Image (cartoon, rainbow, N blue to C red):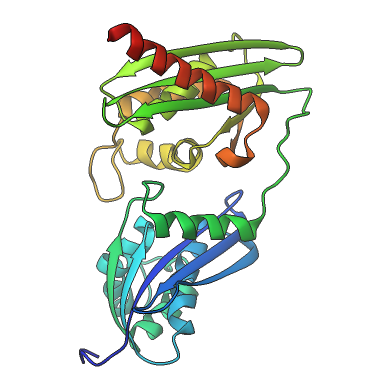
Length: 303
């Protein structure tokens, strides 16, 4: 499988589901020298994020009609660590983990291991939602096949919280804004932040928005940030169990902000909605405009 005569292909993969578990989608982009990008995608009615992240590279490799040299790009830590750290040990242990329990998603891992025998595959991890155009496209394809549920904008029993940010990488500064709607009443807050990242701003927008609430409430929260939603819904609980460390043992970034958010979320019943900017409801657009205004005004004042 090391022959340099093998045809070469770069493959970007992504997968996910909403909610987790729930309906899911996977997507693949194949890049061959001298050819237009080729896109594949599929849907499952009942699945998990991890199964969709695994299904994407499996379907990509199955699609290749003969052995290839493959540069496979994923934003999934689960897939990356499974391939580079766990797979060989699982196979040697009869598909048991170190604690002698059955490997989760064994059927997909076994099928993927069989496909790896056909190809010469190098794995590359990229950070999700960080601007890589093919990673972003794969994410969009996977999301599209899942379908987007209707936003509960007319839920009269809930507080509706719209959070947004504006960020200048050149200045390493930004602003967050939060707009809260309860039936016919609205409240708004916004602030500029120096020496920050976009991810920090997204967490701050939710923290400050939830701080507007004076009592426990049912909350529908709308954001454009998958990072914020995934952190709040999935990652925080796992980080806390590991002493605020990631899967690879490194300290969680922005731990102080995540801990603040966790305390606020515990007090509320929050449903998280990630909305593409192109599909943002009017209130989310207004929050975005407010964040931009605060950042721009602060820049003019400082100059």
